[in-house]
Amino acid sequence: MLRKIQIVILIFAIMFSVGATNIVQAATLTDAQIQAIVVLLQSFGADQNTIQNVRSVLSGEPVSSNTSSPQPQCLSLLHTLYLDVSDATTDGEVTKLQQFLAKDPSIYPEGRITGYFGPATEKAVRRWQARNGVVSSGSPDSTGYGYVGPKTRSVLSWRCTSISQRSINYNQQAPPTTTPTTDRHIKVVYPNGGEILDNSGGKDSGIIANITWVSSGTNGTAINIGLTDIKGNIIEWIGTGVRDMGSFSWKYNQNIPNGKYKISVSLNERMTDIEDRSDDSFILSGNNNVTPPIITSGSYDNKHNVFRISGSGFILIPGSTLHYKDTLSLGRIGVLTNINSFSTEGIDFYGDLYTGNMASVYSVKFVDPTGRTSNEITIDTRTSTIYPAPVIKSVNGKGGFGTGDNDSIYGENLWDTKEVYLLNNSGIKIPLTYSAVSNAQLHVTIPALPQPIEAYVLYVVTQGGSVSYTIR
Image 1 (cartoon, rainbow, N blue to C red):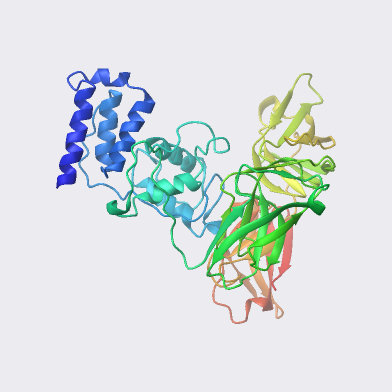
Image 2 (cartoon, rainbow, N blue to C red):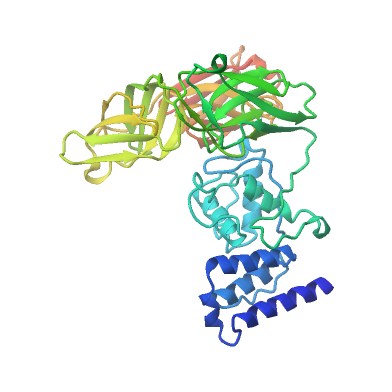
């Protein structure tokens, strides 16, 4: 009761300090001043409805008459979430995030619970970050705006602790970090952000860095160490099946261009179990021997408005682009930046160069921020839709493929899948229910089988053909 009285007194003090008899005057406060007052209210444990009403008063807006009971205000997440990730790689945490955001229609008006982190979810995250004093401008790459990283996860989980456990600091922009507890834990120690590492191969016997981490409850489980871009997308595996000794020597690699990266340490290559990444990006420099990417073929899918280039040596770095030039009409040039899917053998770039008068013959080349530039090839966007052949690279599920928990197929050109089935040696065909997560991933539902999953061959049929995969 005393705490409620304190909050009421604080609110009235704020309102009268800005002239409650003339609400419009409150709008003269700067956004920073309003946010400082909101943080103060949060530190006192004020509910979201109260905070929003005070924000409205200070901003000169109408006060909400909503008297419904306050919605749950905390959420504990273990994974970093960002555009294009899904439940399959985050242990269902995208759905948990969407359910949390959907409780407030002003934050997430669409309210869709899809398990896929799309543009609507990113906008909802931005609204929540701005309202709760995390960040209110910039981009996911520059400031984390729309990116559920360590700071946002900290603020999300803060109210999961009791008020007596919180340390009130009126100058802080975010509540203190609360780390969710798990039976197994891995934490990257080095490099953890801000370091400049030498990849010239001429120092420390060709060692880029000694990657270090701490772990508990892993019982000596072999781990995997990956190099990711700043959004957490794996670029390559530095070490797989590494003994959990807390340290690993990362050796010079002439195929990695200079740029910003993070380190991932996980218990499996799909990062669906225990995983941690560098808190911030580090800089890799000194490599002047990187072989430029080579494009060997290309096509344009006018159904999905996607350029597909294939070849070798592609390394995904934020800011990678596809440059195009119209060879039939003078002056039509441009740059595509929206990457749909990626592998070291090929990249899909979204770009509507088919509709209207955009259909033409284009010369294209790949360029990354380090200056690595591929050769140029010609792609005709006037032709009919090209369906490339599907590729299956791996299958996985929580506990192994076929266990019925997050079973997924990973590969390429899986967008236009028409059928997925299992076939045994006796020719018995078992159709599987599936859904396309992206061009590179299918979710499948495997029913109870009369034989072990290893007795079957997996088939995926798309508009571009069919492909088989032997399950081991």
